[in-house]
Image (cartoon, rainbow over all chains, first blue to last red; front, side, top):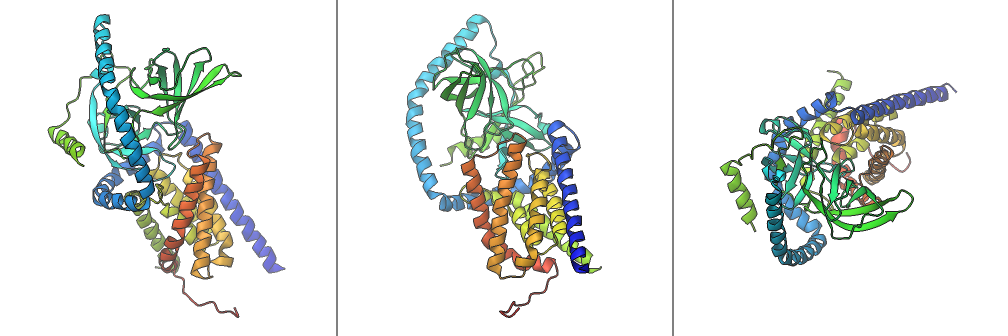
Length: 306
Length: 172
């Protein structure tokens, strides 16, 4: 009888302690979600700085071995991906000429209008991806450049193919990129054909982005290009390539369309990226930042590697 | 140094080592494209030998440490790990001292449950991190990886907790 009472008391006590821990966790989650730039962000930046050298060295050390491991564990996936990439190359080769023509046309139109190509004049900082996400629920990459290189939270990050995300956390020497497939990610976008603006949001790993707030009467077709809209105060300048439309579903109840877009940039196996040193409130575009020569050599050797 | 302090310092060193391995080495050795969650597996394995309240406290502290390195809302891993540590502690009298296979299978089951819990909390606060299919894949990868890892880590955990091994015979 005494033993049973003691066991019940212990069980109640452990449940009470669990409830306290759960409550503390919920308070911490709420604080983190509701506030920006607080003590939690500072602590995370410190951890990012502390782990940075270790992570970049381990990447150098384990990347070749990890590649071999991946080849063994995902051979079928790699084969399918290889076939897909071959098909994509063939498709891209046919569209390269077309794109060149469109670019020339766009530049001549900008010249005629006397407008400045703001995206082209925004400074860029080339950064190396030093590590992949450490969790299955995280859509971030870590870069080897930080606040001392002029990088700030919110800046867009792209490859030659298009936007890959935005800077979500910066320490002195490192920064983290929130990929555009992250559920937290959203950006103002413009449908190139109609000029209508909407909001593109991430939907999770290996999933397309969803554009909302496009009205029912706007004609949107699959294959249409979607770029950033660059609303006033947006951390993205106007005209950055986000992706192409793959699906359009009208929603008569809300009077809008649910548009699915495929990111233009390949988010897998990123090695080098460019951070756009874009300051939304800057009166003039920031002067183009020069990439150090040794980094250019690194990029070239990376690009020429088989 | 008393036994409690020895156990705490050994556990601290073990979790710190596993955390460093998780952030530096594990992401390069993915299984089916997914990252194996070493701290989660260790929390469950340690929790099996602890009381529910110590299991949940261990899970909470390790979760906070992991949260510092992640971009997901701070406290989500702590919440998941404290619940799963509590669950592991609650099952401890039944499985902790059984054979290695039973222990490894329990770790696999609880590990898979924890991945579902984490994704579920994400959905509750409006962050759908993974699709249902991916969640199934992640839970499967966690469970599959947990079996050999739990088997390998078992002696280290027993040393950390200063437990003595003794065979369980049929008449016990």
